[in-house]
Length: 114
Image (cartoon, rainbow, N blue to C red; front, side):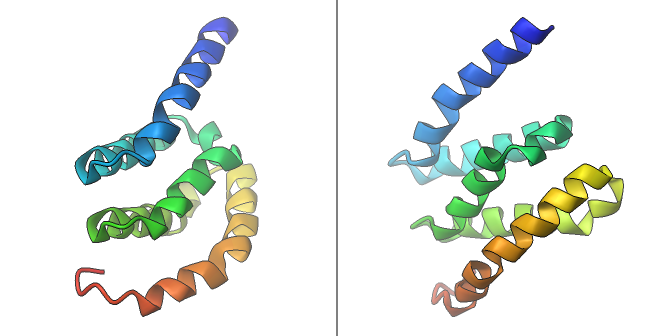
């Protein structure tokens, strides 16, 4: 199983980052939704900064729909924190402290959809 997990991680590392920067808003949004689904299915992904940071970086996407989705995903991490392990809650707490000022800046988002 360890080898399969490694192959899965390598596959995701090769596919997800370029798709989150794709020229197509639809592909970026779909990728973000898939990352959300994967993280819910595998809570250990919350402990890997590359995934939480990837979602956070999408709050700066040019498309309002992608920014909204990224913010709603981050919000869901904290709204459902009771179901997370203590380790995940602790990591998310530290992560929240690191990104809070950046999220507050999103309040100035001028797109009416956001």
